[in-house]
Every structure is written in structure tokens, then in C-alpha cells.
Amino acid sequence: MRILKAKDYLEMSRKAANLIAAQVILKPDCVLGLATGSTPIGLYQQLIQGYQQGNLDFSQVKTANLDEYKGLTRENDQSYYYFMHQNLFKSINVKEENTNIPDGTVADSANECARYDEIIRTLGGVDLQLLGLGHNGHIGFNEPADSFAKGTHCVDLTKSTIEANKRFFASADDVPRQAYTMGIQTIMNARKILVVVNGEAKADIVQKAFFGPVTPQVPASILQFHPDVTLVGDEAALSKIN
Ligand code: F6R
Image (tube, rainbow, N blue to C red; front, side, top):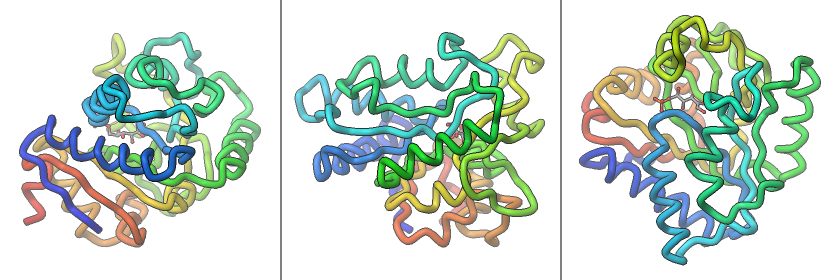
């Protein structure tokens, strides 16, 4: 694992965006696995700047997002579809038909999960998967569990995730209780993985996930077994691993 330390959020965002930019430049038709949440917003802004300055071309890039709340429509401003369009897609030249996000409106979980896994398979797998890290060690919406989930599946969100995400909703009651997420195997199959973390509140889980025992109770710990992981964090998030 490579660890890149940044002095603050902006530098973390720049370093991570540079790694994604390198992927897009080296393989213009690459498949990027994308994440939502607060952490990647700054790096998406950097990618937008790279595009606006004429340094990056997303016209052949394909994307596959990690997850989506079950039950939210695309128009819902808390859906991950909406997030991706607001924070990245609408400001770069990626083609709408080349972007993929699980469809939260499909009630039949088995169908939607199989459809999404088939999309990733047809794309030829993910070249570079971007991940944020949940406070409980979740990646995507793979919550602490007794075993590692494989492909895309429907999860019941834990209390701690509902708590962490309620800041985006009117109240905790409005946070959806379920989500579709790529599985751990899908994530591990990505050829490269880029994890971004910032802030002191992530310091303990960064230590546990990357230097503690590998266990499904800390889903991100499985990344220790991936051959090409880069962790980019600010000083605060990386403060407990030196
Ligand atoms: C988002 C996702 C989540 C977040 C994680 C960290 O698509 O899959 O695993 O990456 O919850 O979220 P932030 O960045 O808001 O701390």
C-alpha cells in the first residue's frame, strides 16, 4: 500500500485528483469506480478544473458508482445519482450513457443487484476504484458484518451510518434504511484502489482498517490484501499511523 500524506483537505483533493487524472490520461476509455460522501467533493472540483483547463477529456470514460440509497428517485436531492450529477457529471464531458449508478427505485433487489453486476462485468471491470472510509470501517455501504459480501447487494444501514448521514436529511427518520452497494469482491476486483480520508474523526478507523486485523467487522481492512491500494489522507486523518 502507498500512503500519500497531504497537509490539508485541498492538498489531499489535489493529490487524489492527480492520480485519477493520470488514469484518464493513460487510458482514455478507462472505467472509474466513483464514490459519494463529503470526502471526494474537493477532488471532483479538481477534476472539473482539469477538464475546464483542457487537460482532461472524459468523453470515453465510463463510470460505475459504488452505491445508491434504496427508495430514492434520481430527482431526490439526497440520491447519489443527484449528487454525482451536481458534483461532477454535469460539469465534465462524460456521456450520460457511460455513467452507471445502482437504480434506487427498483424494488426487486435481486434483479437490480444482478443487473448492476452484469454492467460492471460488461464494462470489463473497474480500472480505478475511488473509496471513502466510513467511521465504522465501511466501504461503499458494506457495513461491519460476520462475513465479507461478494457482489452487489441490498443492505440494511447500521445505526452509526444513519447517524453519520442524517446531516444531509431533515432528520434521522428521513434517512433511507436500505441501500444497494457493490460488494467487497466487486471492490477487490478493481485493478487499482484509491482511498481518500480527511479529518481527525477518521484517524482511529484509518489505523484499524490499514494496520489492524483483517476482519469483516472492519470491512475496509480487506484492502490490506489488495495489490494496488493508494491511501491519500490529510495529516489529521493519518495522525495515528506514524
Ligand atoms: C459513498 C460511500 C461511503 C462513503 C463513506 C465516507 O458512496 O460509499 O462508503 O465513502 O461513508 O463518507 P464521507 O466521505 O462523507 O466521510
